[in-house]
Each structure stands twice: as C-alpha cells, then as structure tokens.
Length: 392
Ligand code: GLA
Image (cartoon, rainbow, N blue to C red; front, side, top):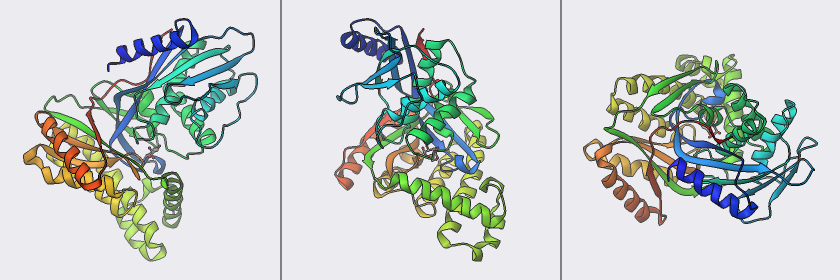
C-alpha cells in the first residue's frame, strides 16, 4: 500500500469512528538497519534506511472544553486512551502502547508547546515488535502530528532526541538514537550514515536498480530482549571504563587485546563486536558508494556472526534465515545477509540482486518454514523519506 492509499484509508476509518474528517494527519516510517548494530549507544556509526512501512495518525479538535487527548489505535480493539493535557502525563502500565505518544506529548508540554484537546486515530503498517522500529515510528508520527497541530516545528535533531527521551522515560527502554533519527531524517533512495557521537549525518545513495534489500521477518520475538539490551549497554560501559576511554568509539582492537586479562570474557567479546562493527559500518558505506556489492555482502555476514558469537543477541530463527541466504549464495543472487535491529527475534536483511528477488523470497520462506515450522514474512523496500505531515 502506498503512503497516499494508507493516508486515505486511515482518514476514512477516522471519519467512521469520530464522525468527521481529520483536520491533521502525519506519518513516520519504520526502519531497517543495513549495518552498524549495537553501535549507536557506543557513539559509533550506524547505516539505516527508512522503509515504506508507516505509522499514520489522523486527528481533529475534540468537542469538549477540557484539554485532553483521546487516542485510539486500529491495532488494539481496547477502549480509547485518554491523556489529560493540563499536567505532565504519567506513564501507563509497563508495555502499554500509549506510553509512546504519552512520552512525546510530555516532551512537547515540557517545552511549553501545548496542543488543544484532540481526538486521534493511529494506524500502522510497521509490524509491532518486529524489530523494524514500530515504536520509533509511533513516537515520531506523534511528534510530527503535534508540530502540524501547533505550528511549532522542532529542529530534526531535537525532535529525534525528544522521541528517544519518550522511549527512555515512558517505555523504559534505554535505546540509542538510531531509530528516532532515521524515522525523522530518512530520504528517498538514500541510506543515512549517522555518526552517533557528533550526530552528523551523511547520505549514502542506494538507487542502483540492480540491487535490493530484502527483509525477512522471522515472526518470533524472544522476551528476554529488553533486559538483555540494558545488560549489553552496561557491559559496553564496563569495557570502556577498563580501557580508560569515555566510549568504545575511542577504543581500538589493539587496546582491547592488551586489556584482555583485565576483563571478563563476555565483556571482552561485547567490546570486540562493537569495535569491529564500527569499522565495518564506515567501510560498508564506502563500498556501497562504489557499488562493490560482494564486499558489502561479506561485511553483512561478518556483522551477523559477530552479533551471534560475540554480542550474543541473535537467535536460532535469525541464524536459520542467514544460513539459508548464505546457502543460496551470490550465484543465486544473495550478496549478504544479517540480523537487523536489537536482536532476539525480529528481522534479517539481505542484500540481493533485484532480478532474483522472487526466487530468493520463495526459497527463504520455504526453507525457513521447513526448519522452524514458522511462516516468515518477506518484503523488499526501497529507502523511503522520513516523517511527513500529510494534512495540516
Ligand atoms: C534497538 C535500539 C537502537 C539500537 C539497536 C541496535 O533498535 O532502539 O537504538 O541500539 O537496537 O543496533
């Protein structure tokens, strides 16, 4: 479904529920990270792209005088969530979807930017909890809607940081900056090389029609994910401390080797992943610019094995997808494949020849079903534009 079709169907759905057309609409995309995993909170580099899957929010001023936001989501059939806008919103129960918009509303209110009361409907084509940043898409779509409603536009960096803060404070997930940045700043046909220390971005063109990025959603999500994420962050900080650097961005493989005896083995391996991955990410950006697809593919496999063995955030299902892809090989049109996002389920991304997409999709889907008994969802996306106001 194109963004225009999605926008039209959300507007029609809104009218059915609230009895009027929406006055404002905004959309923000999910993302897939091509390479640079678990490097953002180590001040390293990441190379994500926004995908053609979006969270759309439609809204209109509410009838009553009380300034409150009434939010409904097509993804949940529960009662609407109501947020009082006269005071800083309190977080909802752990795991509630409303924490994402509530956290973003809190960020706007704290900056003195206050919308009047409104009714909203949220609809998303980013699979929830599928490792494609459905939460960042919801946060950034909310922020973009609030910009449209209030006429106050934030600087892109401030907007992304406000959304990251919402995720930390309201959803309790100590994420880095990648997901919110790419959802705000994505550009059509471009990857974004983001330096997570300086927050400077560089566009890396990805418009060669002969190659495509094929996403495989394993359709599994292992619950240990969120606790393990915080644990990995702590191990990276411990490694940096032992090495005497402020973040692993400043560490080298030689420094790490020399400090090996002063670290727990797991901490050593976490740091080895991060240091290697930061190098692979800038190298991949260079190789993509040169259209050296085989080299890019090898870097993707190396990233996956490092995430599997040293960082230990992969799982049997993600490994299965990567091994099937590797088995197809470059002769069958696969240059490389790796898990993408935080890990413990979610998606893998493969760099493939465009004219082989159909056969590769069939082969990965079929072999994955045979190996795991699970139906995967596969799709190709070109790099998409970031968040946008659809109606103001
Ligand atoms: C999650 C986080 C990101 C990033 C990735 C791993 O998606 O939200 O900030 O750390 O994991 O690269």
